[in-house]
Length: 491
Image (cartoon, rainbow, N blue to C red; front, side, top):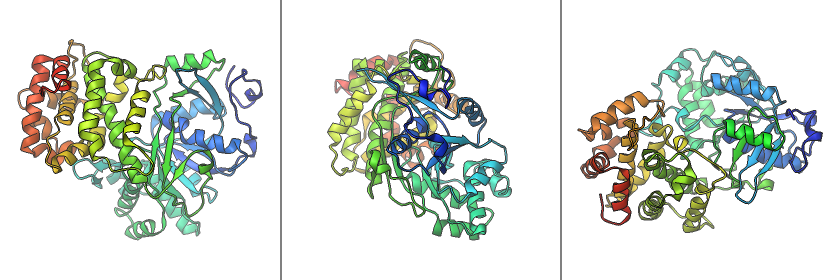
């Protein structure tokens, strides 16, 4: 059955569908970046709220600033902006059709349609999932980089911006001129202090062309911090076939794990949907939740990704079924990550880690190791290096975390231990590969990437251990190195 509004009443039995009249919804949120995660997370929470008969003036309008967003718009428009969401549970998969999104603005080079939509007083929240690397943060300093070419270009042509932040700024300027209250800007990306990071991007961009506007944004626009969590694989033929197994013809279905979590700072001056009624946690302690999640879960993904990739393991649950990979994860987490994670109210970090192990081991998700290895140049500085720095500050040289970094370097050299070629898997793949190959003879070439390691790469303790780990990986292979490490024999 082709997914459409007209087909909702005739969906196969057992498939949940909107219990509300979608034609009666009115928009309140523009979301930039309609990837799988958003459609399995924020859009699902809103669908749940609408099913309670509440918040019908908070419907979603999709948006994007990249060519891939235009393709997503075409796919979703052809099925009335409905999405099939399939929860992958070993106890039995469940499918639902969500209808919280009611429109998708045209994707244009100058973002005129997006700016116009965000200027509408009905829009009170603009949310984003533009990936960890989409915030123009200099990894070496951890702060917004106003010299990035994309930002410089938007600073020169603020009325015709190409970036999401330029479009947001142009809409805020239009609202200020019209006397309309500014919308709240809410990041839904995996970044420490994502609200602060988003604020720095918008204000920093404004300072390039209109310092007075920058001051106004800093004083009047809310950027709440948030922690988001749900494992959501990429969509491919398997996922499309899975939707069809439920009797649904969906060109862009989403699969995800049953678990989901959203923790948000309650700072929405122009209002927000009552998402606490559907499981969202509003708290002043978002930073504690996000530190737990980013270090234990996202850091854990990196820890299992590169050894698995080097040993030609394709799926995440297969990596977790490998005794060496699982033991490597547990040892690094328990010895070097969890001891430096601040306490979270009402949460046992040991229980949280046990939950992470179960989630990673879910065979129904069929998440790929390649996805976890993707974009290490943006993820390592956020998910691994902070834990490494905390260990060093405490006087401990964290062998496991440094070994993880050496595994990433070895992976970026472009071949697995068996000699198989690794296809490009990072926006900076060519540079990383060239640097990783130089590092085979000169390990400091890798640690010298200041945009990744900063001062940490110049620490003699790190340099010494990294050189030993990288040499061991090249000469003895991943399996032998992990065997010694998990047995407590070092590297």
